[in-house]
Image 1 (tube, one colour):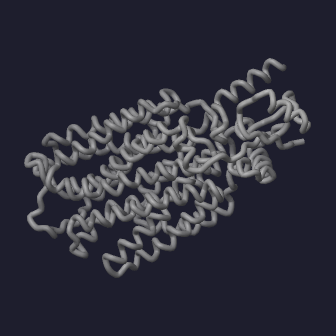
Image 2 (tube, rainbow, N blue to C red):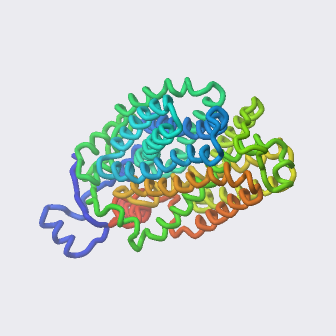
Image 3 (cartoon, helix red, strand yellow):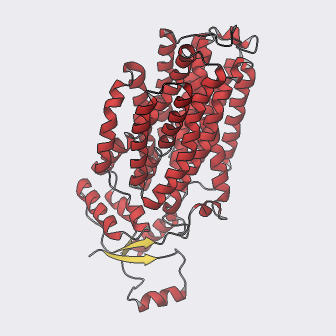
Length: 490
């Protein structure tokens, strides 16, 4: 009973109605969209499986971030590397991620979200193993850069997951993925990377179970596959299939759609926001290690600099350093909890701004002469809010752009974030040694600018359905209109 109705635009005109009548389509016939189907299925067993399985793709990213905060000091001591070469090890990963985010985002929009994830996971596994046997500094840089390229595709798990979610569950569910990300970091801190490495083959096996996005199938004309996926969701959630004709949309354009009159302001502001989030988030991760190695806060802040007595002076991380790193990592759990409570209440834009402003506020006490415990508390609060805000950026970006460019939008935004991430090691690991105040001021300034950019975003997405095409009008308005018409008919 399920048939297909093809439309190229949400605009209705008399000629279009006449044309539809000639082909046997009547405006009074019952139709449904992907959003209608997902709302009918609700959030059930199928979505819970997707939460866990797509979340596994974040484990590689979690391992990478923890390696970056520990690898630098270790290689600085063992290979006698100067600070700029230590910073370069971190930055080269983000260079790879910056390139991989856009490339794999484009692959995901052309060949499917699942294809992009497959390439990402196999790439990271292969080059990650090779980088473990890097004999010299040059080879380490090349292999870490290639690992970064693969990690650039990890955010496509958010694209895939978000396209299976009903409207009311989207904000909560996407942020839920961050719980696995933080849990992986805690496992790394507590037990090392052995347990996480065991999960790597599991991640590849999981890809065989993951279905392709029905939104992608609908947009590329593979309606039979979309209907098969709907049948699978309906069966697992114990719901009935919607009746009527499935409305599909034609794919319009590639990257130029990001700069149409409707999206260009949103695109540019989001690029600034993603840059600021990565710059501050990875900055606080790296800054934590550097401040702990500097000893008592007064030693660094009173003189305004942390100057080693020798260019190659070596300090290994102590047990106390590892414990405090663990505590600051756990900050991401309360950060996620706060965002879960506010994201649907105050909206995406205000949630983004709140996290930026609270980060800046939390960094201010470090300017003063405070002890190690106080520094840990400040870093804990700052990291809680900036990590929570990073997740809101994923939610908002996946909601504000249509299906035809959603993966590319997340990919290009990810590229901008990695530009911020590759710059931040030279601030947190190099500039910090000559000016503590200058380093803290840079992070506070970029955080404030990110908060302002969040508030002036032109579109609020809370409570709205996902768009399929740039020709489609506001999905939230469409859903409301269909519902009211249906009620009037009844």
